[in-house]
Structures are given as structure tokens and as C-alpha cells.
Amino acid sequence: DNNTENGAEEIDWIVIDKKDGKALVISKYALDCQPYNERYTDVTWETCTLRKWLNDEFLNAAFSETEQGDIIMTTVVSDDNDRYGTDGGNNTLNKVFLLSIGEASRYFADDAARECEATTYTEEQGAYVNDDNGNCWWWLRSPGIREEDAATVGEDGVVSPESELLEGWAAGEELYTN
Picture (cartoon, rainbow, N blue to C red):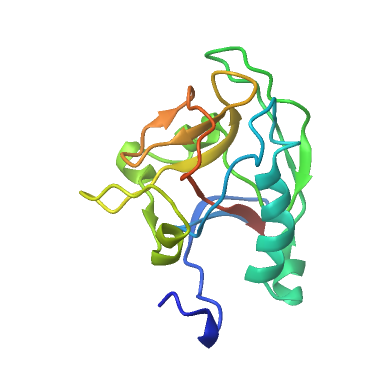
């Protein structure tokens, strides 16, 4: 209902993979609109401000201490952008992360399955929302065409490895849980 005075909204999760007793989940809706990085400079998943925000501000606002205990610290591989040879940087340890280009293609059957609807809150935070379908763009952790860019998924569900670092893209949160 986008009213923070009556408590946090429940997050709807989609299980996209299960293995070894853990589940990889992604939020069904875009939950917030955050820049990939606050400055337009060379950046990787390891150094971007969105990673810090997800694993601090978002994690603490969205999950109780008990729930945080159920979220698995995960080694996140930072692959290069194969199409452009852009450096992905170092692997990281995270509780909350974004999918890579490869994972976005592997875990969803087609473009329609990758489409992501924005919440009212996300739209009010400045996310670009397509008026025709209510969907928004969402960030991937993979680098884009240049060192200062990041890949995205468009409002039509198409993975875009050449996206430029712009504002108005939503954060699609992923995590492993027991």
C-alpha cells in the first residue's frame, strides 16, 4: 500500500533455483530505485554503491535479525562482460546480490519471464516504468559496455549487456536462503 507508517510491505519471492538444501530467490517486484553507483566512474560489482546499499540499508530494513540469520553469505562470481570484454572485477561475499548476465538468461525461460513490475514505491523513487505494461528496467551485477556501465534487463525482459549507467533503473534483489 506504499504506506510506511503501517509497517514494511511483505516481499513476494520467486524461487529460481534449488540445490543442496538452499533456494535462490528473486523478488517478484522491483522494490526500490537505486543507482548502480553514485558516481559516474569506473566501477565493478565489488565497488558499486548499490552492492553496499543492498547488504546494509536494504538488508537491515527488509529483514529481522532472525530472517537475516537464514540468509546465506554467498560467494558471488563477478564475470567479465563476454560481449565487450569489460572487466567484472573481483568475486565478492554477499547476502543480497544481483543476477549476472548469464544467470538472468539461465534462470528465466524467456524474455517474458524476466519482465519485472515496479511497486508504487519504486515508481515514486524515480524508476522508469513503461506506461503500456507497468514493467521497469532492473540492474544486473555484470559490467556493461564500458568500465563505468552495468548491464540491465529491459522492461520487455531483454537482457542488455551494453547498458549505460543511468538512473531510473530498479534493484531486483536476490539471495540464497535455507
